[in-house]
Length: 223
Image (tube, rainbow, N blue to C red; front, side, top):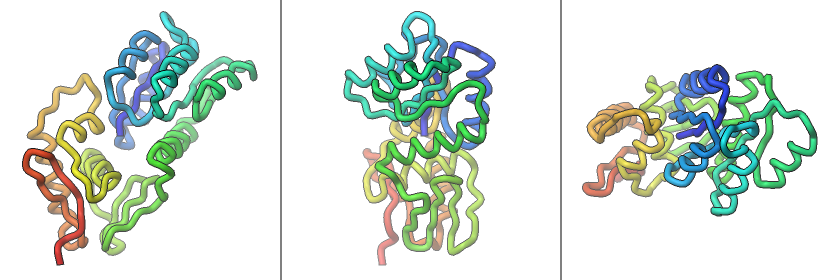
């Protein structure tokens, strides 16, 4: 899952990036509202963490423009502004949640998980397909009760495919969801991770199929 952080305080932005990448999210960070607005026009994000006090374009205006484009991306406002009216304005403009600085990293991660589930239509905390179980909160997979040893990128591949179970996912979509835009990663890398995930799903009753020219699809194994 790919997240955009719009925060002009470099120390906070770096702390957020570290905390989120550690649990497997792809993270992009911008330091002003104009860059955030441009990124949101052209990139596919699952969530935005938006500071209100951004230079060039205020965070509230970034949010206003995002919602004018009818974009349903979940937005978590992160701000040192404590006036109730600013919180109300942000929520009225379409923010999904609001957390004040300073904040607990654990609380922020929990709110991010909740918003991402909401953005996926309120996905169940645990999903099961045949003998495969995936915990969408802890982002862990198990096969017949045994935890699968997946790397963070393998987990990301499995998560994206499970979110579109039975439907094609292109390599470009996987790259977009798994890597920030400053990472120079090619299709070969995706092929490697998909191959590893497929091997680890052996005996699960589901498999990752290659759809030539279209990408990949996770589906039940043919009986």
